[in-house]
Image 1: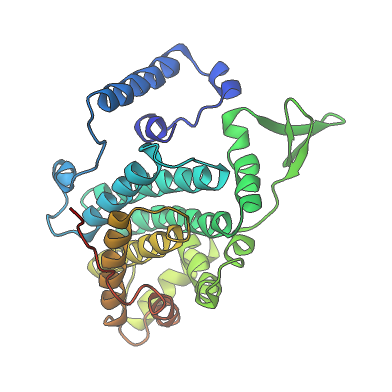
Image 2: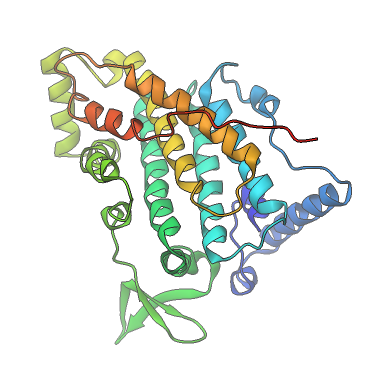
Length: 321
């Protein structure tokens, strides 16, 4: 199912499959046959660095490495079938595939969109991280996300309609009638993190990223601040923002990688890949700075504090005969 989602974008249950169009069903069937063929031929569905050459990014772009690590993690620890995929591992894998797809979109967008548009994608990436933090804390949390976040799209749940009124904040199971709320915020998700730095970063980062999504007073205020300080984070100084987009994407990707290490039975190859990427990101963020008076002055110390609790050492990787 994870492989099919990556290929098609569909998260399918038995109930949800019935609601798809003929073309959508055929697309899913093709992806399933492709996976079966690769498995029968003994091929790993491993994501190679060369796979990203055609996307147009630079050869030394760190996002290529992030995509490679996420792709291989999914293949080695989920698609391989070496371990039982319980609800927690399944939800985390689903969130990882969404992470992979968003990082890929950011990677592709660097040459074709503005940095402000890329930051809208970064916000989506950060929201998924908040959910991942919540899911990795317990199987109960993972089950809640499966029901509330994915249940509607999979067709298992539907929005409650009572007395002729639609209650969008409540979902009801089509079969059992069980009701679940959809009222938990991203702050509630991130509040379960074992790092206090996560909560402190959220307080400034989420509002900042949201200002690129919502028009209105915050957008006007941000533009005014940029112009008054002389350090513009709009089109006047887009090169600065491009660097920041890249750094922030790497930081959130590293935080995500660090989070999935809490799952059981993670391959040694994945652990080594993750420790190396996190170590590099930690160094880059800790050694960076922003001009005095910039809009990022309040945000950057929080980013550095979170980077400081990323893995500080590269895990040794021993190749056994």
